[in-house]
Length: 236
Image (tube, rainbow, N blue to C red; front, top):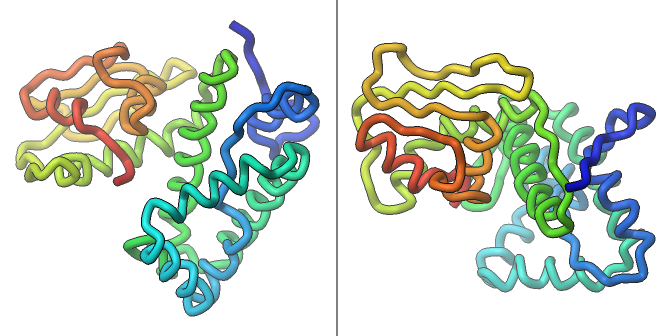
Protein backbone atom coordinates (compact mmCIF):
# COMPACT_ATOMS: atom_id res chain seq x y z
CA UNK A 1 0.00 0.00 0.00
CA UNK A 2 1.25 3.47 -0.82
CA UNK A 3 1.87 6.06 1.88
CA UNK A 4 1.48 9.82 1.83
CA UNK A 5 2.99 12.54 3.98
CA UNK A 6 2.54 16.31 3.89
CA UNK A 7 5.33 18.28 2.27
CA UNK A 8 7.64 19.96 4.83
CA UNK A 9 7.62 23.04 2.59
CA UNK A 10 3.92 23.46 3.18
CA UNK A 11 3.29 22.54 6.84
CA UNK A 12 -0.20 24.04 6.90
CA UNK A 13 -1.46 21.65 4.22
CA UNK A 14 -3.20 18.52 5.45
CA UNK A 15 -2.10 15.18 4.08
CA UNK A 16 -5.20 15.16 1.92
CA UNK A 17 -3.60 17.88 -0.20
CA UNK A 18 -0.80 15.66 -1.45
CA UNK A 19 -3.29 12.83 -1.90
CA UNK A 20 -5.48 15.08 -4.09
CA UNK A 21 -2.65 16.21 -6.36
CA UNK A 22 -2.53 13.07 -8.53
CA UNK A 23 -6.31 12.83 -8.43
CA UNK A 24 -6.71 16.41 -9.65
CA UNK A 25 -4.37 15.77 -12.55
CA UNK A 26 -5.80 12.39 -13.46
CA UNK A 27 -8.06 11.85 -16.44
CA UNK A 28 -10.10 9.37 -14.43
CA UNK A 29 -13.17 10.87 -12.81
CA UNK A 30 -13.37 10.37 -9.05
CA UNK A 31 -15.93 11.57 -6.56
CA UNK A 32 -14.28 13.66 -3.85
CA UNK A 33 -15.78 15.06 -0.65
CA UNK A 34 -16.71 18.71 -0.52
CA UNK A 35 -15.73 20.52 2.63
CA UNK A 36 -18.46 22.56 4.30
CA UNK A 37 -16.03 24.40 6.56
CA UNK A 38 -15.61 27.49 4.40
CA UNK A 39 -18.00 29.84 2.69
CA UNK A 40 -20.07 30.79 5.71
CA UNK A 41 -17.41 30.33 8.40
CA UNK A 42 -17.26 33.99 9.40
CA UNK A 43 -21.05 34.30 9.34
CA UNK A 44 -21.32 31.33 11.68
CA UNK A 45 -18.73 32.55 14.18
CA UNK A 46 -19.19 36.29 14.13
CA UNK A 47 -22.76 37.13 13.08
CA UNK A 48 -25.30 34.55 14.27
CA UNK A 49 -28.20 36.23 12.46
CA UNK A 50 -26.52 35.80 9.09
CA UNK A 51 -26.31 32.06 9.59
CA UNK A 52 -29.99 31.81 10.48
CA UNK A 53 -31.04 31.47 6.84
CA UNK A 54 -28.58 28.61 6.40
CA UNK A 55 -29.98 26.82 9.45
CA UNK A 56 -33.56 27.31 8.27
CA UNK A 57 -32.69 25.90 4.88
CA UNK A 58 -31.06 22.83 6.45
CA UNK A 59 -34.10 22.21 8.65
CA UNK A 60 -36.49 22.61 5.72
CA UNK A 61 -34.59 20.43 3.25
CA UNK A 62 -33.56 17.69 5.67
CA UNK A 63 -31.25 15.10 4.11
CA UNK A 64 -31.63 16.85 0.76
CA UNK A 65 -29.51 19.70 2.12
CA UNK A 66 -26.39 17.53 2.36
CA UNK A 67 -27.25 15.66 -0.84
CA UNK A 68 -27.40 18.91 -2.81
CA UNK A 69 -24.03 20.04 -1.43
CA UNK A 70 -22.50 16.68 -2.34
CA UNK A 71 -23.93 16.85 -5.87
CA UNK A 72 -22.55 20.35 -6.31
CA UNK A 73 -19.13 19.19 -5.18
CA UNK A 74 -19.16 16.23 -7.55
CA UNK A 75 -19.98 18.51 -10.48
CA UNK A 76 -17.26 21.04 -9.61
CA UNK A 77 -13.99 20.75 -11.59
CA UNK A 78 -11.42 19.06 -9.42
CA UNK A 79 -8.82 21.88 -9.40
CA UNK A 80 -11.55 24.33 -8.40
CA UNK A 81 -12.80 21.97 -5.69
CA UNK A 82 -9.32 21.64 -4.20
CA UNK A 83 -8.82 25.42 -4.23
CA UNK A 84 -12.20 25.91 -2.53
CA UNK A 85 -11.30 23.33 0.10
CA UNK A 86 -8.00 25.06 0.88
CA UNK A 87 -9.62 28.50 0.99
CA UNK A 88 -12.44 27.27 3.22
CA UNK A 89 -10.00 25.73 5.65
CA UNK A 90 -7.98 28.96 5.86
CA UNK A 91 -11.14 31.05 6.29
CA UNK A 92 -12.44 28.87 9.10
CA UNK A 93 -9.08 28.93 10.90
CA UNK A 94 -9.02 32.73 10.69
CA UNK A 95 -12.62 33.01 11.92
CA UNK A 96 -11.89 30.78 14.91
CA UNK A 97 -8.76 32.75 15.80
CA UNK A 98 -10.74 36.01 15.72
CA UNK A 99 -13.58 34.72 17.91
CA UNK A 100 -13.40 34.61 21.73
CA UNK A 101 -12.65 31.02 22.72
CA UNK A 102 -15.84 30.56 24.77
CA UNK A 103 -18.20 32.64 22.60
CA UNK A 104 -21.17 30.46 21.66
CA UNK A 105 -22.58 30.77 18.15
CA UNK A 106 -25.33 28.89 16.26
CA UNK A 107 -24.64 25.50 14.77
CA UNK A 108 -26.84 22.76 13.37
CA UNK A 109 -29.29 21.72 16.13
CA UNK A 110 -27.12 23.33 18.82
CA UNK A 111 -24.64 26.04 19.70
CA UNK A 112 -20.87 25.63 19.78
CA UNK A 113 -17.81 27.61 20.86
CA UNK A 114 -14.47 27.87 19.03
CA UNK A 115 -13.05 25.65 21.79
CA UNK A 116 -15.37 22.89 20.59
CA UNK A 117 -15.61 23.82 16.92
CA UNK A 118 -11.87 23.46 16.30
CA UNK A 119 -11.55 19.81 17.37
CA UNK A 120 -14.90 18.96 15.79
CA UNK A 121 -13.77 20.24 12.41
CA UNK A 122 -10.42 18.49 12.80
CA UNK A 123 -12.30 15.27 13.57
CA UNK A 124 -14.63 15.70 10.62
CA UNK A 125 -11.79 16.42 8.20
CA UNK A 126 -9.81 13.44 9.49
CA UNK A 127 -12.79 11.07 9.32
CA UNK A 128 -13.89 12.05 5.81
CA UNK A 129 -10.26 12.14 4.81
CA UNK A 130 -9.99 8.52 5.95
CA UNK A 131 -12.79 7.71 3.51
CA UNK A 132 -10.70 9.16 0.69
CA UNK A 133 -7.56 7.30 1.75
CA UNK A 134 -9.55 4.06 1.91
CA UNK A 135 -11.13 4.67 -1.50
CA UNK A 136 -7.81 5.18 -3.29
CA UNK A 137 -5.85 2.57 -1.33
CA UNK A 138 -3.35 4.88 0.36
CA UNK A 139 -2.16 4.37 3.94
CA UNK A 140 -3.20 7.20 6.25
CA UNK A 141 -0.24 7.66 8.62
CA UNK A 142 -1.47 8.66 12.09
CA UNK A 143 0.01 11.56 14.08
CA UNK A 144 -0.35 12.76 17.64
CA UNK A 145 -3.04 15.20 16.48
CA UNK A 146 -5.36 12.22 16.82
CA UNK A 147 -5.48 13.05 20.52
CA UNK A 148 -8.07 15.71 19.65
CA UNK A 149 -10.25 13.11 17.96
CA UNK A 150 -9.74 10.62 20.78
CA UNK A 151 -10.69 13.22 23.39
CA UNK A 152 -13.94 13.91 21.54
CA UNK A 153 -14.58 10.18 21.48
CA UNK A 154 -14.18 9.93 25.24
CA UNK A 155 -16.34 13.01 25.83
CA UNK A 156 -18.95 11.59 23.46
CA UNK A 157 -19.76 8.53 25.58
CA UNK A 158 -23.08 9.96 26.79
CA UNK A 159 -23.98 10.88 23.20
CA UNK A 160 -23.16 7.35 22.07
CA UNK A 161 -25.63 5.77 24.48
CA UNK A 162 -28.29 8.45 23.96
CA UNK A 163 -28.14 7.92 20.18
CA UNK A 164 -29.41 4.36 20.64
CA UNK A 165 -31.93 5.23 23.35
CA UNK A 166 -29.86 4.05 26.34
CA UNK A 167 -28.94 5.95 29.51
CA UNK A 168 -25.28 6.64 30.15
CA UNK A 169 -23.85 4.10 32.61
CA UNK A 170 -23.22 5.53 36.07
CA UNK A 171 -19.94 3.70 36.69
CA UNK A 172 -16.70 5.44 35.72
CA UNK A 173 -14.70 4.35 32.67
CA UNK A 174 -10.95 4.05 32.13
CA UNK A 175 -9.60 4.58 28.62
CA UNK A 176 -5.97 3.74 27.79
CA UNK A 177 -4.79 4.37 24.23
CA UNK A 178 -1.40 3.87 22.64
CA UNK A 179 -0.46 7.03 20.77
CA UNK A 180 1.34 6.97 17.40
CA UNK A 181 4.60 7.93 19.14
CA UNK A 182 4.27 5.08 21.68
CA UNK A 183 3.06 7.12 24.63
CA UNK A 184 -0.13 6.20 26.49
CA UNK A 185 -3.09 8.56 26.59
CA UNK A 186 -5.30 8.03 29.61
CA UNK A 187 -8.77 9.15 30.67
CA UNK A 188 -10.70 8.14 33.79
CA UNK A 189 -9.78 6.73 37.20
CA UNK A 190 -7.25 3.91 37.36
CA UNK A 191 -9.53 1.80 39.56
CA UNK A 192 -12.50 1.88 37.14
CA UNK A 193 -13.94 -1.54 36.36
CA UNK A 194 -15.14 -0.50 32.91
CA UNK A 195 -11.98 -0.33 30.81
CA UNK A 196 -11.20 0.31 27.15
CA UNK A 197 -7.70 -0.29 25.75
CA UNK A 198 -6.08 -0.25 22.32
CA UNK A 199 -4.37 1.87 19.73
CA UNK A 200 -5.38 5.50 19.35
CA UNK A 201 -5.89 5.04 15.61
CA UNK A 202 -8.31 2.15 16.15
CA UNK A 203 -10.25 4.04 18.82
CA UNK A 204 -10.58 7.04 16.51
CA UNK A 205 -11.71 4.84 13.61
CA UNK A 206 -14.29 3.31 15.94
CA UNK A 207 -15.76 6.53 17.38
CA UNK A 208 -15.96 8.13 13.92
CA UNK A 209 -17.83 5.04 12.67
CA UNK A 210 -15.13 4.20 10.10
CA UNK A 211 -14.50 0.72 11.54
CA UNK A 212 -16.58 -1.53 13.82
CA UNK A 213 -14.67 -2.19 17.00
CA UNK A 214 -14.66 -5.91 16.23
CA UNK A 215 -12.35 -5.14 13.28
CA UNK A 216 -9.86 -3.22 15.44
CA UNK A 217 -7.40 -4.15 18.18
CA UNK A 218 -9.57 -2.49 20.83
CA UNK A 219 -10.38 -4.49 23.97
CA UNK A 220 -13.17 -3.79 26.44
CA UNK A 221 -13.46 -5.11 30.00
CA UNK A 222 -16.92 -4.82 31.45
CA UNK A 223 -20.38 -5.07 29.92
CA UNK A 224 -20.84 -1.30 29.70
CA UNK A 225 -17.43 -0.84 28.11
CA UNK A 226 -18.25 -3.42 25.44
CA UNK A 227 -21.61 -1.79 24.75
CA UNK A 228 -19.93 1.60 24.45
CA UNK A 229 -17.56 0.41 21.75
CA UNK A 230 -20.49 -1.15 19.89
CA UNK A 231 -22.39 2.16 19.76
CA UNK A 232 -19.50 4.66 20.01
CA UNK A 233 -19.80 7.84 17.96
CA UNK A 234 -18.84 11.52 18.05
CA UNK A 235 -21.76 12.78 15.95
CA UNK A 236 -25.44 11.99 15.42
